[in-house]
Image (cartoon, rainbow, N blue to C red; front, top):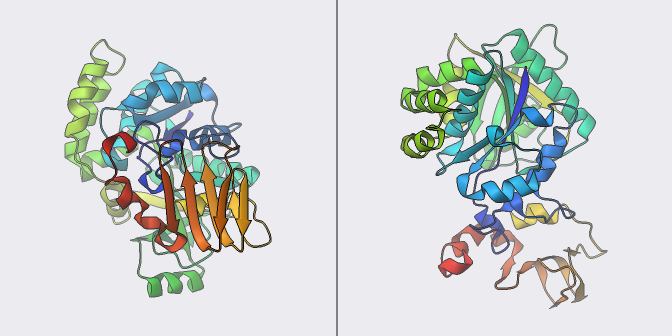
Length: 359
């Protein structure tokens, strides 16, 4: 049976001061009044029914997540006592689903992305499910067609076509965050895709692979699975999960699996518009611009400005800017950020230096 797991962890410090520990980016209603988590859930409509969608996030956000996703049940809530990176989030889902349904196949999606058109997304996800259902030992990743030589994304190289599946390929190799000149070569080669961070796994086979490549995680996940659905569930999760080694899915599972004859990896290219909303410049791309390239989600008054991006938690608060170019302004009720657009990656640094009440 088909399931989905939405990863909604992360602190979103590059979107400070709007994203805070008390309300991280995936819960902010700043995309046309909806949160990234809500958008991720809506994207699964018609693909996986609501009763088979799980959400993995910090246990401290359960109340907020439940409000944002009213269809989410306690049985489908995977509360992390503390973040242990993506391998363990995926392993958590695999452990719970394998116990619930020995034939469970699940897609991993994140709450960071905007993807259009929906029809193409759904079509390619269906192909991904079919690949894993046909061969449970096969891991599936989804590749996004690169539009520029990005150095902050991982890449996957397409190998030979998989017979019987339209535009699906064996994955030849994975490369994490290449240097600029290498990324340019990948862009020109036309055989590389951005690694989207979305995957399809057969739950039991995913757990089996974790037992091979990261047995320390498997031992803990097995304990959690054994306790799941019992009176000891939360006690065991709270005690065991923080002890799992913190490591990413790509490093701990996908890379070793790509070199292991016991596993095959398929890449399903997606011809979609894909935005990773992880910084203020990427958020600004979700807004329309005026003739000078200025963007805002609130009332503004500009004089002699170009490429100004303004965000506010109050749509009726007016922000005025004079004589500036390529600047980001973010206003909240208790903190304001002003920075050059090309320095936006450093927002996460400033977020750690402000008083704790503003973090």
